[in-house]
Length: 158
Figure 1 (cartoon, rainbow, N blue to C red):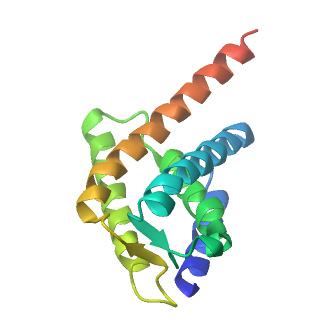
Figure 2: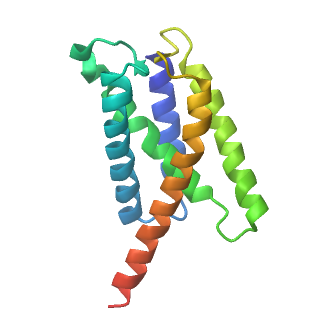
């Protein structure tokens, strides 16, 4: 729980105090889609199929997962989008995503440490699944953000 608490405080502090790009509306959208997708994904992979879990596999201890589901990943997505090099060439954007994938992978390894530092556990889910899933998730959040910006632009023109 110590590692999770430190990560939540650090990620949220960095996300909100370094934000120069994201509007309040965009932040709400990012948090909402992130929490929704994580809850949906974890419902199946964590609770139903036991691919991975946070803290315990006991379904009656679901409340322990709430900080992980609500406060951990949304600020990471904020940082990813806030610093994304939209105006740079394709090679720089690919390098940026690759660096984020390495950082996420290293953080996941830290989260796998035993408690009190770690809180994440693998069942059948493993590194190969993370390597396949994370690029798709980052691209999804990137295109979702672009879609929200497009909607805002259209709405502002009315």
